[in-house]
Image (cartoon, helix red, strand yellow):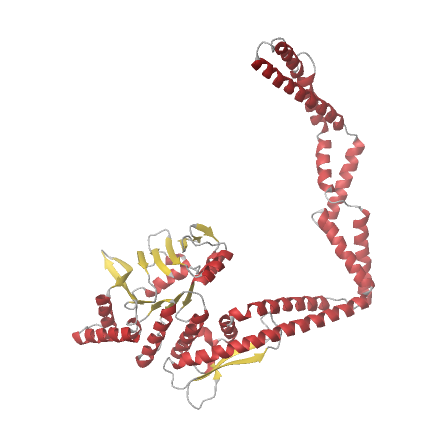
Length: 557
């Protein structure tokens, strides 16, 4: 549930903060008061696009923050999959907007905009003013069916998509087969040349790294030898060496160690240091013998490195990649040398892959159609509840001409809104207001299965009035019983149903105009209903009508 909205420095908003409640939250206000700015702010917090002119004049940044209370275990599990963990049930989405860039955060941690959108899709669903127009496009209908049937289709959709990818991979390989004999002979000769070049080099994984270390050592051999000799001089040669000094110190302590236990312990430590230094000198002397290189060793090392680097430029950036390339080319050689057998085997694989895909797609289609029947009946009943006298709603299935990862079903919503009329494509029948009601019916049905707790409707009342508006308000109240609903409306019938009522208002002080949002108590809510009903002049009769509308709404709920 969306608990809190905080907006700063956006358009006409200086700074607002509003607490939303459960059930039906209604937002009303005069035309131009800034209702679209409020919803736009929510969209921005959820990862929507923005331009710098959305920032309040004179401000160098804008800020939007949404705070959600998440208690649904399924939602919590989905969030965990995205590595988002509610803190005491709270998830906070925020976005700081600056000229040319933005910073998105979840629970204070900076995230990519894509992650923000994924998390938002789990927590909230927004139905904008023109979303109902998406119903006109047939390509969206399959998505609605699958969203409704999600819990029944997940495994079958994954299997179908996997089978489709396997089939397309076979088809692509078959399409790439060279059938010309002369071309195959030419390709075979080239492949043999590449393989011979790699195999004759007798490459060994890690050899290039070893050679590079050796080359650095040979190239700097004189510097290394001089440094080793100098170090050996200071530690093991002459009266001024560290080794000679340690020997003298040990002899001095040995003469007095019997007199005091501490001296004896120190003498033992110094003897250990002397032993370590002797070991070091021995290793240093042995190492110095490896610092002598001939010109022939340098020449051979350079040539081998050049040979390996030449192969890298042709076949791969590492020895491992070169050898993998060689294995791939050898496999291709075997195919070309026994081409007829390979071609027949590939055709068989394509046939089996196609059969497997069709089997998966058919199984998907059976489940999809079964769930579509339930959805079809639910939408039809829902649309009838929204003051359609005699409606028939059908979900028509046909088979696609081409295979796809979604299966072979092509879906289209069909409807008849008048008695005696056959069902026809939705795009050919419904007007804007009718589409809005149909979308509301779909949202209501989807809400019963969808675990998204917060639904936002922006002016769902477009193109409706009278009895139809009353039916829409009742439907909104029904949805509000199981979900948190936030609705921007111009209609008193819908506003009267509010569990929580907010006024969006534009005010001007000292020549500066700002938009604010204010929670209304029961008396203030009635006054706002009266404003919506009465317009410029609010009479006692209008107020009485508003009171009566509010009481009737409470009884309906």
